[in-house]
Amino acid sequence: MGALTHSTSKSLLFVTENRSPMIHHLETLTTLPHIKKITIVVGHADTEVKAACSTSYNGIPLTYVKNNAYKTTGSGYSLSLALAQQIQPPYLFMDADIFYESEMLHEFSLIAKDSLLASKREAYDDEMVKITTQGANLCKLNKAETDNLSGESVGMVMVHTPQFHAHIMQEAQQRAEQPRYEWEEVIENIAQNHPLHVSFTQRTWTEIDFPQDLTLAKKLFSYQK
Image (cartoon, rainbow, N blue to C red; front, side, top):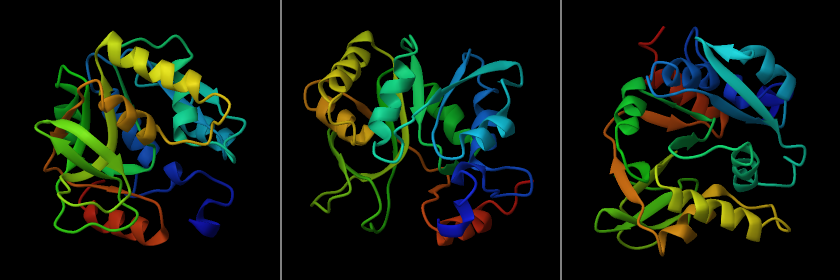
């Protein structure tokens, strides 16, 4: 994101007049009746993130976990730091740099099984985290171009069973000495032996990785205040 995020997090860049991705996450999550707490992993611009979000949001307590090694680690390691805070299923984890129709998260939260959220695309590019499925379950989850692509990962996973949670914790332990890995690697590996349902959404959403993505997000959600 270049100069746009020199002194702030891209999750704090405003997409609409009143909402950044982070605030949108919090506004949406805190309308779900079964959300009891929210854990945010911070690294770059952690002070700014904490100031924007405070210690609670709409009455839901917020906990912050600092990834001091954020420059040399990946999202998988950040996830392991969050789960080390005695988090137990059911829980939802998500990327911070996505913006979406709130209804998408509401609908996904109603699925009472281990699930990954995805959407079908007419075309795919190198930056998309692409999925293939076997039946209704996840088979592959990465950026590689393969045949028979099923869709693009939105960046949200619902963990319902203790078994799937245990697999995530085991993967984190095995990768502790090489923490530069993404959570998608963990989920893809687990899915080879433990079914992970893929839920497809038709709602509008976008990931924000580049300045042009922010421009697109502003256009897509210009109707929101």
